[in-house]
Amino acid sequence: MKALSQRAQEMGLPMTIEMAKKARELSATGKQVISLSLGEPDFDTPDFIKESANEAMAQNYTHYMPVPGFADLRESIAAKFKRDNNLEYSADQIVVSTGAKQSLLNVFLTLVNPGDEVIIPAPYWVSYMDQAKYCGGEVKVLPTSKESGFKISAAQLESAITEKSKVLIFSSPNNPCGAIYSGEELAAIAKVVAKHPNLHIISDEIYELLNYGEIDHVSIASFPEVYNQTITVNGLSKGFAMTGWRIGYIGAPEWIAKACTKFQSNFTSGTNSVAQRACKAAVEADPASVKYMVDTFAARREKMVGWINEIPGFELDTPPGAFYVFPRVADLLGKKFNGQVLNTSLDLSMYLLEEGLVSTVPGDAFGLPGYIRFSYAAAEADLQEAVRRVKAAVAQLED
Ligand code: PLP
Image (cartoon, rainbow, N blue to C red):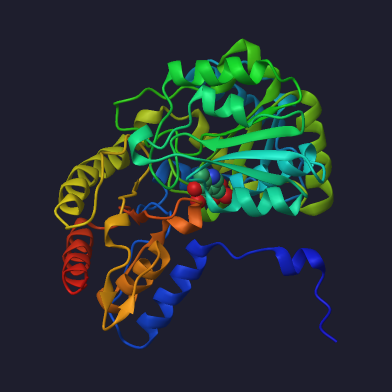
């Protein structure tokens, strides 16, 4: 008898992964799909990081290691937080995990009891929802829009908080829309959170380095009134093109770091030892060492925004960070192809995949229907061809 646990039945598969799977299925039939649905830099890991991994293997960093990460790595991460984010964390406040994904799950497991409220501004990264629910959290989604720059206001947050509110989680720069909260906006949010000592902030800063200069990156934990309520999450996947190495980390109050370590010791043990040594080289490096990637993304961003805005029914402002554009497509909903109505952005995204052979992710996956995410972590020629196909597919739609 197949008796799946309740947990297994309720756990969703991220729509981003589903879309990538569908794109692969179409490709397997010989169709030339352009995949813009995954959140992965199209660069290889820089050589200086790979060399440190080679050295680590030669030096036999091949054994079990401390569960929260090598002590010297945690010192280096603490120095990075100080250097880049004006944050004072000791090594005991840092836990290195198998990707920021595990860092986030550790924190949810540490903080959320069944019935606790988890506040998530939309659009949000897909796994926040499933991780929060897995821990029994009652999710309260705060919608935003293109008009608000996809950001919540302090007043919006304040009116959502109840005595059951335990966690506020957001990413800045944001996946899927590239929004970045300014220092002033974060200060206003911090002021509200500080009034509610039971509420914690999970600040996901994994796209920190993918910032195109319009809005400075600020860590909300740098506001002293919320330092003890905040968990700062970061990692190497995006900024250092290290998705496969699986390294994420947190800076947090020590009691939270300790509990995360306890979960990790039972679930996965310390993160891969060679990847940890490579991580040390990355966090110690001057962020300017990856500027060539950021410059490339910046150039593509300009082009993508121009091209996308030429598609009738697509509306897009220039996103200040990450490597996604998230145009509004609501005006196209209700249109038909071969008599079939495209009611949702999911329908539109599927249509673009099947008819245009371009894979995207619908806003529905990120809690904000009416929008579609395109990653521009792809070669410029592919981006241009993808937009041409999307435009042609949209031109076939009828009222
Ligand atoms: N947070 C956000 C906002 C992301 O987009 C991602 C990856 O897509 C992650 C966390 C997880 O990153 P990692 O590869 O370190 O697990």
